[in-house]
Length: 174
Image 1 (cartoon, rainbow, N blue to C red):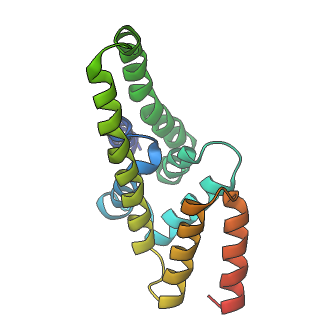
Image 2 (image 1 turned 90 degrees about the vertical axis):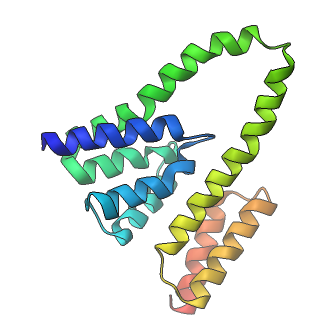
């Protein structure tokens, strides 16, 4: 059990510092570690936890608590959550003073412009990683692509898109 807790702390501590924009940007790495590296769950289990984290109230990044709980019970959930949010929170706190003092500096705008496409690219990589773990028929891929396009191009509430996708999947027999 201690070994699993140490692995959870190491994994989520590292992912905490790599998550640009949100924890969504490191979902593929989280999935790869939980499924392939450590064998805490199957791809389907991970997708189920991801879905639960999206429909449950609160931030979707709390998937880390679900992964930790699956790997090592309540202690795993606590360790994973602290490891995911602790290092990045401390780093943000430390950098906030510098960022505030440099509000008029030219380099600040360059950094903001450089980080935006990185965050977007990492989120799209998460989508690709999740799609790879789903069923690989044409209809599910088209349904996933359509839902992604609707979410990208509109301001429709994600739960409405999720419900419509579930209804379409049920109607298509997926």
